[in-house]
Each structure stands twice: as C-alpha cells, then as structure tokens.
Amino acid sequence: AGNDPVAISLTEQLARYLHQNKVILGGLHSLIIRNSNPDGQALSRQENGNGVYLNRNFPNSSTTGDDLQNIEPEIRFIIGTVREYQPQRVIHIRTFGGNRGVVAASRGAVESARDVAKWLGFEFVDLPGNSADGTLERYLSSASTCEVVTIAIPAMSKKNGIWDACGDALLNLFL
Image 1 (tube, rainbow, N blue to C red):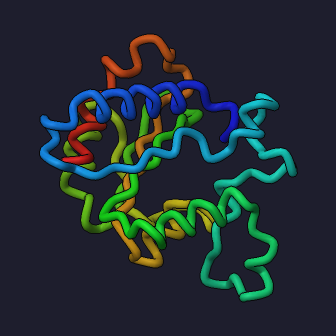
Image 2 (image 1 turned 180 degrees about the vertical axis):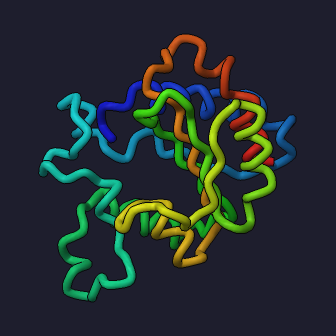
C-alpha cells in the first residue's frame, strides 16, 4: 500500500542495517524493494496511480494469459524480479488494521516465522491458508517458487521505535 509509512520505515531501517553489517551476515545476498507503490505513496493512498489496490492484483489459478495484460506494472515488476533473482525467501513487510500483528509463512519458513510471531506477541498464520486471491502471499505460496513470510505490523504502531520493536525479529527471518 502506498500509505504505509510504518512498513516503509521498517524496510528502510532493515536495508540500512543490512548494508552496514555485511560481514556479520556472512555473505547473505538480499534485495530490498523499499516500496512497490511509489505513486500511491506520493498520493498518500493505498491504491496506485491507476486506483488499483496492488495486493489483490497478483495472478491466481483462474488467471489466463489474456488476464496477465491487466496486471498492474508494479506487480509485473515484482513477478519479474522474483523470476530473475529466484530468492529462497521473500519477506513482505506491511501494516495490519488489527490491534495485534500477524506473521504468516509458507511451508519452508513456518518454524522461524512461528518463533518470530511468538517473540513479537503476534498471531501466526500458515500460508496459503485464508490469504485472499490476488495477494502476494497467495501467489508465492501457491506457485511454490520460494518461501514467503509476511510480517504485518499493527497499524497503530509508530515509525519511531519500530526498528527497536521488530528489527531483531525481522533479522531472524533472514537467518
């Protein structure tokens, strides 16, 4: 979502930490997408500049070749990036409207994600589970192209202090 300053801030802090601590992570390769919806951010809204909520725009089992033309360019970018880099794990950082956060994970990441959820006091959800059609979580966990973990921070969280609250837990998802 473009209007997700807490998730963007946490992502920026994660990128900064990874950049500054290359030796500690022992050669771990990472690619950070700061915000896949920059026009939504510029407009301070959830949807992109075309009015589309991107996390319902990923292909699903009923998507045909013709439908792929209707996928937003931001989603094509994410899909292309996953295909090009073939990551072992994708970590999706976002906020969540509830009072309690959620950590959701596909098969290969369940153990570490469950630990992180317990550590943070968040709910844990297996993927694809009840993830909605068209979401990144449903797309990646159903396609089995890589592991996916979503860490959904409660929307009431503040940007200041979010790294202190979640940074170590987030780093555990890398390891």
